[in-house]
Length: 445
Image (tube, rainbow, N blue to C red; front, side, top):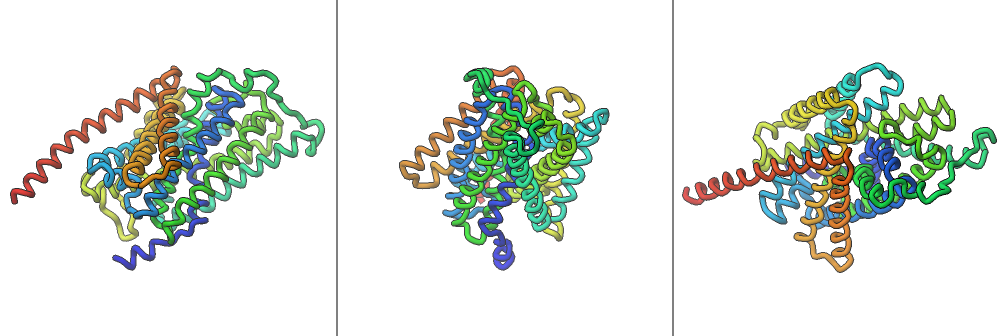
């Protein structure tokens, strides 16, 4: 067993950085950012800088706990160590629920990207196809997952860089004076489309662009040198935040603000405005690759975390069963059932399904980030700067969550997340009584 664990420590810090770039640059950025632009205008760039900073604070808290003691269950295990079994139980199921919602969001986004080519084809057909392909990749095991994600990460980052270069060549007229144009923000309204409230309601969608750092945290336990986890996270978040801000800023300069809409990637909107038809089709294909990469990452992480939950006795033990290739196949079956429900929801609520599911999934994910920061406050001896970072993370995350109350589109997702939290809390209370009885019985024996 010791040799097997040793062999599993096979990731260097730069490989984890590359994986992190792949995990975070998914549908939350390539599609969800359109909603943020629609609501906040050019001030979305400020939001990306803010969300990037807070994302770093959250991952740094997780990374420091990994440096102190690498745990198989990652963030869930740290919550358990900090506050007891109830916290580990709640955190695990909260994350599982958030990832199931995010899977629905990703499948919907992939369907929307593909419908650009096949307008009359129902959304659920594409969602089903991508779900099947994602399951096949996960069934290849950890090595197959890492290789696939590394390749797709390079493709995604190359696409963002390609767009930045293209925009920098178009604006001054290098690619022809007939294409040279720039939509300057000449009014204050362009910077703050819907004022402070617009920024507030957009913040959740900007945070959603950084979803994936928790998957990076799961993979960080496989680092050859766990002490490199903070460095890997810092480099990854600096790179991805810089790319996000540059690409979004240029996209808004290439197309009028009124052209951006929630059902289309801001990159496609910008390229369509340039009338670069061939490039639009190429980029749409890249967006599908990017979204599929995030889908696979979510599938992998949610299956892995459910297996650890079951191993700790916080889920039916059958969910911890693995096959000869070390794949938790029973947990994967549960994930597949969850995806099927997401596809059914997409079929029943096609109009606003992406925004509803994204809001609920994004909120659930922020709640898991809160757990990470709170666990770090309990387990680590934080310096003054560490206290400032954790307090800032908690404050901004709560502000982002509360902002969803003030938008009628976001509100259903907010209440859905509260209902889910209430259910998890209720089950946790019941389980605490069960655990207490079990302990009393064991002590009597």
